[in-house]
Structure formats: structure tokens, C-alpha cells
Image (cartoon, rainbow, N blue to C red):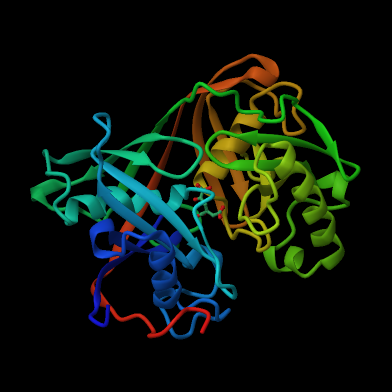
Length: 353
Ligand code: NQM
């Protein structure tokens, strides 16, 4: 592979990633991962020799292919390329990069435009949600990126992309309890598309509105959270999560700006400047279930999740049942924008060599 490789860069929601057709990458996962490490610039922590931006939110890959599933148009495989390490993980999906999958599939000719709005049915290959419908604005037979939708976590308005997730058969509380105590801290473990451990700010001696950089600088707090995460990950059925990017840790407190809840989210070692899409859906499921550490008041299907750079609105309908609660449907609005389309040249050799 000494030639350039076809690649499109898009901002998807409040993240940024490199999008590939599966046919443009090696079929063998080990070979593919090594190539992607070199394209993104890991294991250098600044990723100075690649496309990555030196932060988990800007070191992401989407691999898209036609789907064999009759209910989907395309398959979407998300890969987190870890900055600073030679690690590529498919243990989680990414609802932010998901926002760019519909536009990318249309641009690459995998899905025909069907009018002013084109619905792209996406099968998510990673755990733990499967089918998604993305409604992409396509006036004049082209993907429209410009628009007036303002999305917190992103400084410029763009065209809306509506994402609808059907519910799953599995309950959203994978430990079978609404509250567990791990490493002396009361938590709620929830997975409505993203495994998240929810903790109360007050239980950690926090106010809940701290800056991401402030939280990242507290080594004692980080040590405690990692202790909780390792035990919680095993209890959630994820096995040994030491080298995994899940579960995330969302610290909740009372809303400050008219929303439903305030969050600060470790993903899991850096602090998110906003909150992940499916991470927010998982928090919303906990917020609307009586008995969790995050329970907030009403049963309104709109949950307004405050985060460091604004508020993220999640629509969520639950089939209530305590620890057996299921999600019937959830929805969010995101935006995406094509940044570049062309060829990328990976660093030669082996990623770790
Ligand atoms: O939770 C970051 C992001 C994400 C993931 C992370 C995401 C999601 O904001 O669906 O989008 O939690 O690692 O891109």
C-alpha cells in the first residue's frame, strides 16, 4: 500500500474523524489497524505525523460498507485510535461520528438521494445499539452541510441530521441493579447504547461544574475513578476494561442552566468537552428511571443534559420496570460537515516500529 488511500474527513457532531469505505482498507483487522495507526499518527501523543488531533475526540475512524442486513443500507464500524498508544479499539461505537455516516454514504454513492431529505438506514457493527435511521438534508440531489442548526460543543451552525435509535430487547442496567457500590462509591451502571457509570458529584467532593482541565489535573480523583471503573466494567459484563475505552464515567449534579442534569464525563481518561451522543442517551435513561443515583424529577421524554459547553437534548421513551427498564426509542439532532476528500498517505513501516 504505497499509494494514497481514499479518505474523507468530516466533523461528525462534536467529534472529527477519518471516514473510509471498507473496500479501501485491508480486510485483515490487524493489518487494517496498523495502517490506521500510521494514518492517524499514533502512538505519538500529538499525532503530529498523521491526521489525528492528539485528543480522543479527534482521533476517530469510521469504516462504512454496503450492508447485507435487509433492514439497513450501510454498515458502520467505529474505531477509536488511541492517541499516545498503539491501540485501536472497536469496543464502543460513536454517536458523534455516526452523524457523518449518512452524508458519507450518500457522497460515496452507497445510498441514492431520494428528495430534499434522504433517510440512510445504518447498522452499527460495534456494541451496543444496532440500527439507526439518519435523516440527511439533500436538496438539489446533493448533501447539504450548511444550515442554521446550532449544536452545543460545535462553534458554527450547520444543517441538521436527525438520528433515531430503536430500543433494544435488553434491559439498560447491565448489573441488574439500579445502584451498586464500587470502591466505596454509589453508582448506577447503565447502557442505552454506550456503557456509562453514573456517579454523583457530591459523593466525590465535587461541585459538578468543574472545567475539564481542572478535573484532568486531579490525580487522586482520577485514581479513584479508575478503581471504580475497573470493578464496574467487570460487573457490567465487559471483562477487564483496563485497556478499553468503556465504560465511560459521567459525574452528575443538579442542573444550572434550565436543563435536567449537569454532567462531566470521563471518556474514560480525558474529560469530554461536551458529552458523547450515546453517552448522553445512557445518562438520560438513568435520569428518567426512579431509584438510580441520577434520577431527576419528571417523566418528560425530553432530557436536557448540561455539559461543559452547553446542553444536549435527548428524546427518550422507556418501558419502565426498575432494573429491567428498556429503551423503546431515542432520538437526537446532530450536524456534520465535510472537511476534505482525497487521498491520505500513511507513514511507512509498522506503527510500533
Ligand atoms: O457516546 C466520545 C464522542 C464520543 C462518543 C466518547 C459518542 C457517543 O463524543 O455516542 O459520540 O465518549 O468517547 O464522539
